[in-house]
Image (cartoon, rainbow, N blue to C red; front, side, top):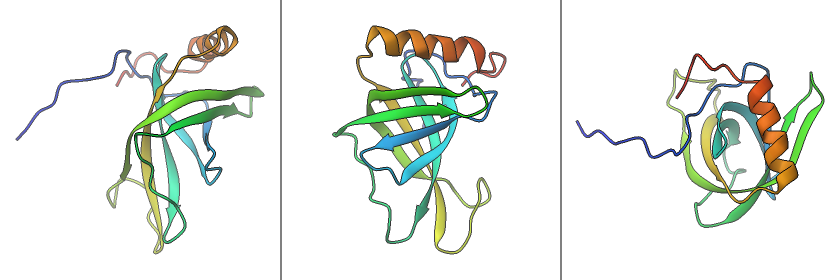
Length: 132
């Protein structure tokens, strides 16, 4: 069995409230945030056979973080894909023709306003007792 060391610079925590990530320019990549930190996040989205383009790690993208109960919206965070993988059957919703994928993102350089908003999100909307 091969083990790999943790490569994240910051501990990731699950969101305690329902929060979503929208990856741009692929607006078909909208999914629930599974964990988040100051340096990145992971979210799960549905992949429809023959519809979703696979993500690669070379492209500079933008992500929006959306949380409706608090009307929280953080826009245009620069990011890069670290991984984009199919979630195995039994670990997520699985219907014929629809698969769930998990995408890990590393944030790029944030503006002061984006950094302050992300800090506010992390202060109010994560579960600190469950680190990843």
